[in-house]
Amino acid sequence: RLVPSTWNTWADSHRTAAAQASQLTLTKSWLDALFDVHGHQVFSLGLFNADPHPGNILVIEEEDGVPSTKLGLIDYGQCKRLTPDEQVRIARLVISVAENESDDYVAAAFRALGIKTKNDSTEFLANFARLMFGPMKQEHLHHSWHIRLHELDRVQYFPKELSMVYRTSLLLRGLGISLQMNYSISNEWKYHAQQAIQRNQLATS
Image (cartoon, rainbow, N blue to C red; front, side, top):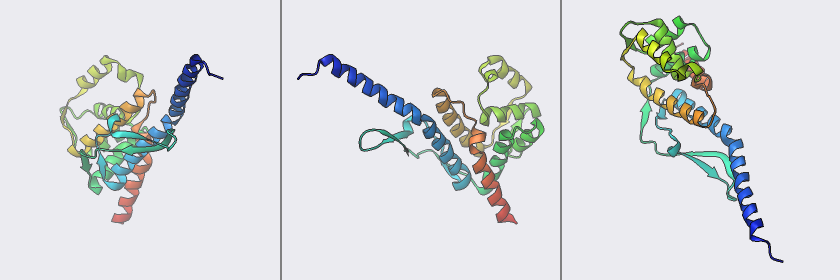
C-alpha cells in the first residue's frame, strides 16, 4: 500500500519540529556548561579563550543525529593568560558584584585592579562593574541611563588584564540574551572566583 506524499511531508515537518524542540530543552544545559568552563579557565587555569562567539561553539551530535549535552569549543587563537595575583583581584570584583555589595566595596575592588577615571566616582565604578558582570537590567536598555553614567565620570585607563575577561563576559552574556536567557556572569563565576581566592590564601599562608 502506498503512503500518500502529503503524509510523508507532514511526517518530515514534524520530525524537524521534534528535533528543534529537543534542542531547546538542551539550551540551558549548553549555556550552563559554557559559563562554567570559561569561569574555570579564567580563575582556575589562568589561561582562557577570549573569543567564545557562537561560531566557535559546536553542538556534538550522537550517532543517530540527536543533539547531546556535549559541546565542542574551537579556535583558541585569542587567548589571555592571567597571573595568580590578577586572578585574585578580578575574583574579588566578580564576587562583590555577585553578592550585591555596597557601592563602596564594589568600587574598591575595581580600583584594586588599577582602573583610572577622571573623577574617581564611586557610583560610576560600582555601576560600571555591575553592568560588566551583573545581569542585564531594564534600565540598561535606556540610552538615558548610559548618558547619566558617562556624566558621572569617564574612564581614562582600563586595566589590560581585565579587558579580555570583560570581552569574554560580553560574548557569553550576549549569547544568553539572544537565546532569551539573562545570565549574571558574576553569579555563574562566583564559585570559581571563590576557589581562586582560597587557593591564593593557602599559597600565602
